[in-house]
Image (cartoon, rainbow, N blue to C red):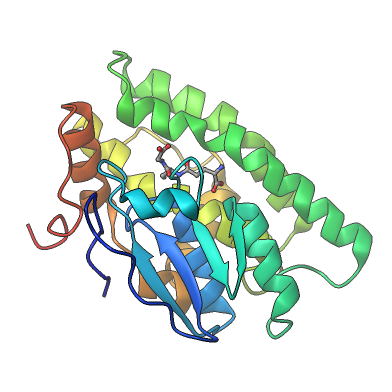
Length: 244
Ligand SMILES: N[C@@H](CCC(=O)N[C@@H](CS)C(=O)NCC(=O)O)C(=O)O
């Protein structure tokens, strides 16, 4: 399902003329955004995975900070997940992920800008050693996600994109997929009740059934394994986590 993560001392795989290349890392939510868009739009591409703990020397010529994702299109290199996804949506008009109407597209972009602050709570819970009760975490989660819940309610649609997922949906999904790892960390189901962010929770179930999401789905256990290794300040063996 995925190529080996290349490390220090490796050589860059030969490029294939005319084929898009995404530099990625299997567990990176930002890279997942690009992979979702590539799949949703059925764009032929290859994936080159990067070991972010032991970055290959050659990779700094692609991305000066050595981050993923980065997209290579001929001589062009595009970095930053949102710029990559917008680039792909513009270059490949089939199955557009934004509304055609410019004001509506602008609105979608504004919502996407809010995703980072809404979802930073997940990383805070997974990667910090802060001791809080599940009830306290739930309060923080609901507060952080309420603006997205309100937006979905205002739209009155199953997905932010309407009756099928659009750009907002795919930009948000990687964090919704990782949310299941929180219960694994806390050792208990989160005490979320029916009146807590009901539309977003319905959205998450519907997204899980989207064929594009399903094809790239790794599941909470894999993310929790990576988080645990990272918390111990050890280097995850990205290639064996799914089979371990
Ligand atoms: N703002 C960037 C964030 C990319 C990012 O932080 N990627 C992480 C992996 S999930 C990374 O490359 N980390 C390696 C590093 O920071 O050196 C985007 O949206 O693409």
